[in-house]
Length: 66
Image (cartoon, rainbow, N blue to C red; front, side, top):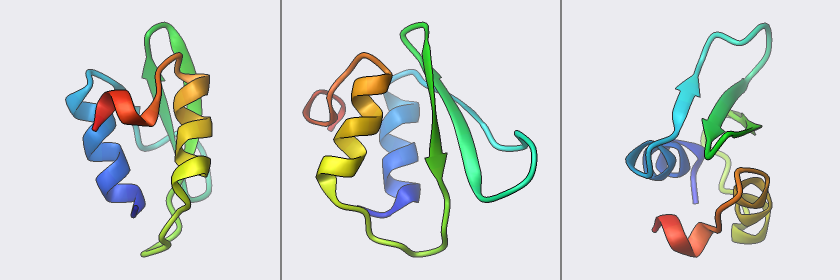
């Protein structure tokens, strides 16, 4: 899954996405009182397990937001 698709899923789940969080290609995402950084490196296709690890940091699971 591409990062843009993942961010759309998170936003639909009610996450707050902060784009201008310092330098670099990372976005700050806040959901359920938790936060994590999501890498934004072009058209990179990320492994679902990696995306699920980020979801765990947000106190949810990838299958719950799809």
